[in-house]
Length: 348
Ligand SMILES: C[S@@+](CC[C@H](N)C(=O)[O-])C[C@H]1O[C@@H](n2cnc3c(N)ncnc32)[C@H](O)[C@@H]1O
Image (cartoon, rainbow, N blue to C red; front, side):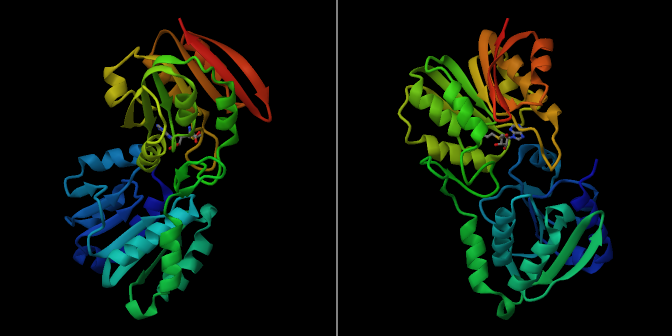
């Protein structure tokens, strides 16, 4: 199903043919690939998309450069607002900086993720914006006029996107990655239940900024390799920074991977890991999607060697035990409280 923000943007592009005809290059931030892209003609596309499932379709687009080190000077920049307000504001500030004088900023935002307030805030920063509503989204847009910019607010928006300490953890994270303000209580609880005897080749599936990996590597000394996987590149980069100070004999490897499918390293290394820890994602938008966690569990089962162990934490209502059993893993619930359960499973 096409993302509503992309559908609304397609409508906006159809209504503004003069802009799409002349703009080159075009900056696309957190953009999902959809029909609207054909409306951009042959323009070079600078695509900032660090979430692997949304980045993958751009790899097949000839005129697109994915995740360049910096944004080029451009006349048109389009930002897809995410559920993380501070991240979206930081990215809006960055593209305003990259736009040429008179260039156009376009933001597409879902109403249920606060499109109206984001529009108000962007109007305050830019001086003025116009807006249209379509497909339960707002598309708002305005020109960069140097004299009208609120430079102080832009600086605040830029600063709030930077990595910052995660409360009481010694780790760094930034808006746009899961639980960036404080350690997720489910992950913390899982860490409390992990044995200190994990050994051999291990992995952290959906590692985020590396909290569980930090806990495992600082306690289990028998690990020879430790692989971290996440679909969000920004989280993985933070994990590398966060683990750089952990003393361990385990070789560390970082994989930008969509774990719903066995791709790259996972595909070429079936039955590889002695142990896997994970706090699987279970929603992409607002609604719970247990099939997302179930897909990661399938990939974990594929990746474990016979008799290898999987430790996971999940919300109590998620039906993961039946998935594990169907995959031939023996599973037991180690603990259940405060809406969570800790499951340990072993591949036969
Ligand atoms: C519940 S969080 C756990 C993060 C981390 N383990 C922690 O404790 O903070 C889930 C993680 O899954 C990642 N994720 C979401 N979809 C994914 C996918 N398809 N493949 C791999 N990772 C994914 C997210 O980026 C996020 O970092």
